[in-house]
Image (cartoon, rainbow, N blue to C red; front, side, top):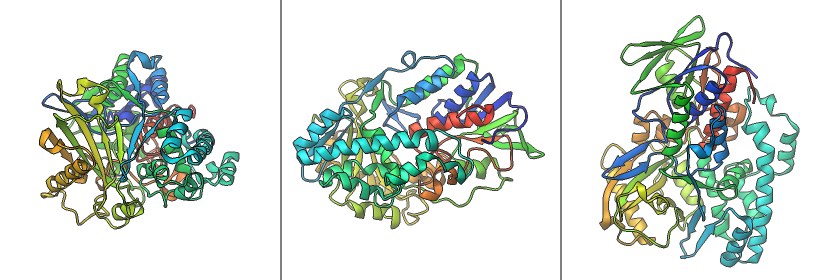
Length: 495
């Protein structure tokens, strides 16, 4: 494994996102002197916070899986997860709502889930589910140690016995094809393959190796931290500061200073020079190259994941028929992915994620009120160049989405809205995300593993990257792992 050459005593981490904070904790646990420079007034990066009129909204991810990775980062400095977060297991993890009016609750307990599938789709489908769980669990075990939780420098690093086991298991076939081997009902086929969108691909284009996302989402367990996902950011930052990490909020870094092939430190927007033996960059990797490393060669041109429009809705109306997380499927399926990913168009029959955090934690909304997070996949700025997100499109599209939700059972929602904030690809771009997407580079075969931009700069021997733009990839679990992998580049330790 390649590691940072030379001294590594003083480390500056640019950005207090989840990856940067995880990296800081692992480095602090290894005895490094760590300073985190964060431009915002709170930690979290994409996992930030929006407070409006008594409503508290998570600005980024809302689905939390694999809390053991949070525990691992806290454990690097001797802290216990339960001392920092109150995690509520969600049951159901999701509720799927289908165009025919049926619903399917996703339980992480396999026996209960088999019973739910048998009730909705029949016993043969439940048998397929149990076989699917065994298959997905096996893929996760084969992939995690060798290909996810490990720094990869070159394609030959993939050549392990588990690679050949994955090939034999059909993991390099198409995801939808593999899922269809276990399920016949369109409803189960959708709920166990829609997660391909997290990887930036349609289920009929993604590889079956990404079955593990469905496994983490629907089998390993989904949790909600009281206070929202931003509570994870606050916990990581609090533990880091307790153990000597200095976090400076309101500090915008404008440039990495270099000399003789090494970074010497960073320059802030107000002209201060902060010296460092190692610089860890948490901004979106292509943007870090563009804005902070203008003299360094950027990575090759990347293909980006779709973006999304998010509605932060505070309303007086609540609904008994929904769960904490809800997937509302439209009638269209393959066409929906083609519109967003291939043709750069808005979905004509959208599938939507609706999260209702106040159902689990009433403190995130005023008394008697309800908070909703509505996510609609849309083209990124590269693909959807014809969509004017800086004009009146955000307002019109928000109205369309609220009307769609009204038709799908959220009767009276639009009339009860007290707070509405709309986040578009233009806003993601303004926040420093390449192509206006919070989901980074798509996980196509040639942008995965050792083919994804590496976390150690090719020519600046002491510049390290962390976050979803580098290995292992997108999602809270992968970003937490990226923090550990980045720290290992500095310390020379595993993984």
